[in-house]
Length: 338
Image 1 (tube, helix red, strand yellow):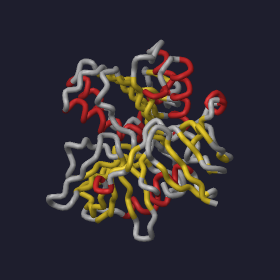
Image 2: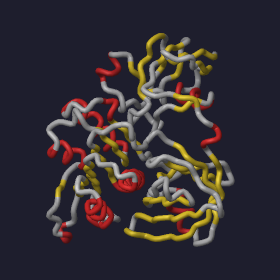
Image 3: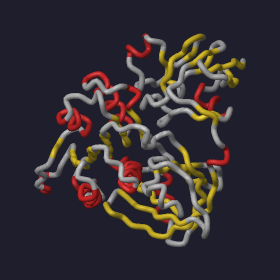
Image 4: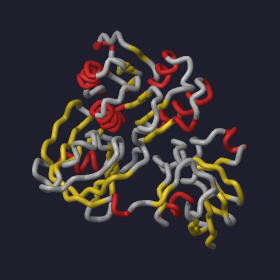
C-alpha cells in the first residue's frame, strides 16, 4: 500500500510505499535530507513524526529512549503504516544539475600507513567539480555497484579528488579492486553527495572528532576554512588504535602554524608498548569531554566509525550541553563492499 508523506511547515509531499523507508522514498522523490549510515546507528536522519504511524523495527541505536518518547524516528528505518506528517531538521529539493558523473584517472597512489591507501584522481582537462568541503563521491562500477569515499581535497582543488581508503579485511574494494589499480587507470565517479560540510554562517568554535580515515573529510573542511581565513577557534581530536594509524601527523602541525587558534590532539586507544607514546589515550570523544566542560556554544563535526559518532552525539548532548542541532556527523559503515 502507498501512503502520502507531508513535511510539516512546507509544501513538500511525496509517496512512500509500506515496504520502503521514509528516507528511501524521499531520495527517490528528489528531496535531500540529512543521513549517513542508513543502518539506524548514527542518528543523522532522525526527525519527529507529527502525525501518523510508522514501523521502525530493526536496529535503531541512533535514537535515545527520550527521543522515542518525544515521537522521533530514524527515517532510514521508519516505514509508513498510514499517511504521515513529518518534521526534518533540514530538507530541500535536490538540484539535479549539481551532481555529475566523471571519468577520472588515477594520478598517484601512495600508502602512508600499512592499512591506508591514498588515491589521487584527476578529472578530464577542463572538467571542474562543484562540491562542499566534507562531502563524498561514489565510485561506480560496471555492474552497478557503488562505493562511497569522502573527498580529502578542498573545493578549491576541483580538478580532481583525493581519497583516503582504509583496508577492510574481506572487503571487495579495498581487498580485491584496490590492489589491482595502477597509475593511469580510469574510475567512474559521481559527485557530490552528503550533508557533512562546514556551516559557514556560524561563528561558533568548532570541535572536529575523527577516527581513522574519518580524517579525510575533516582535512577538506579545515583546508577550506583556512583558505577562506576563517578565524573561528578549531580543535581537532583524531583517534586511532596505534600511532602508525595516524597517517598524516605532519598536516595538523602545519595547520597550527597557519592559524594560532587551531589546536590538535591525537588520541590512541591501544598504543603499542614499543611506541613509547606519551600523548593522550582512551576513547577520542572522551578526550573532548575532558578538555571541554561545556559544548553549549560550540559546533561539533564527527566522522569515522559509527560507534564513535554515536557515543559522541549521545555524550556531548547529554553531558556537555551541546545542542543536537550543532552536531554534524558522517558515519563510515563498513561491509563486504568496503
